[in-house]
Amino acid sequence: MNTVHAFFILVFIFKLGHFQETDHKWEDFKQRYNKTYYGSHDARRKLAWESNLEKIRRHNEEANKGLHSFYINDNHLSDMTTQTYLQKMVKLTKSRHRKVDPETVGDFFEILHHIPDEVNWVEKGFETPTYNQKDCGSCYAFSIAGVLQAQVFKQTDVLVPLSEQQLVDCSVSTGNYGCGGGSLRNTLKYLDKSGGLMTYIDYPYLARQQRCRFDKNRALVNVTTWAILPARDERALEIAVAKIGPIAVSINASPHTFQLYHSGLYDDVGCSSNVVNHAMLVVGYTRNAWILKNWWGSHWGEKGYMRLRRGKNRCGVANYAAYALV
Ligand SMILES: *[C@@H]1O[C@H](CO)[C@@H](O)[C@H](O)[C@H]1NC(C)=O
Ligand SMILES: *[C@@H]1O[C@H](CO)[C@@H](O)[C@H](O)[C@H]1NC(C)=O
Image (cartoon, rainbow, N blue to C red):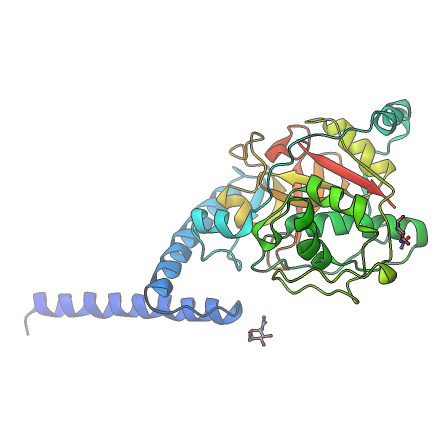
């Protein structure tokens, strides 16, 4: 064997070693997030995952140099291409009309000067577990159930989880699509006429749509009024969060940095305010950030939460925000 042969054999061994190492990590990844893929599907997911790992490496290297205010990381969504992610995870449909309650909104502005610089409902006790909508486009149900749970908490100081599943199963009657998506407005319209929302215990989350099993006699709360805040008005959102409580917002979740968000102040200039396709719950704000709760498990974001740059309507966070009273 001459040196040229030896060289190629060494290169081959090195490549094989590298190959086995990524293969091994891919198996680890699937095991960690409980994923099983077969045949070409496995290869496609692996390719998407490797491409995301490269994006994560580059982004975080830049963040270390101070070029970004946030980090991204490998999570349960990192084996999806942007296209797959958009198809599976962001299913908020358009809310067509705006029902603005001029009286309440007007009240906001009269009390302008009483708004604190920082509000955090989690610190005030609205500390709810990490939720996971799983493979179901139910963000609309989680955000509205969150709004109502917070109102019950404000009145009683008790945390009673409410039924997202009721909203998934039953709000098809006002135009939602179960796990295929829905809008904040259609969900609130459903609650206008439903006769109440049940608790999570009585009507637990299944991550798939079933027949509506709402039982009026076991409803815990009724929505008495609801409204949409003035569009693109972050000041109105701030006042509403301070005075009313956690607020449901629609948001643009499209960028891969959103999909893979890990920690820090999310401020991707590529996160346009022209589209919104996901719903979250604003649970507070700091001087420079909105604090948002998401439903993508504990591996996404800061234990399921995001801090989002305030003051630029980043990701359209103030495009369509809704509150409800119980
Ligand atoms: C993984 O999937 C199995 C079977 O569906 C399930 O029983 C188990 O709870 C899952 N584990 C995790 C960590 O999600
Ligand atoms: C909600 O309102 C409906 C209709 O007014 C009423 O029948 C029902 O008892 C109320 N439920 C609760 C839990 O307040």
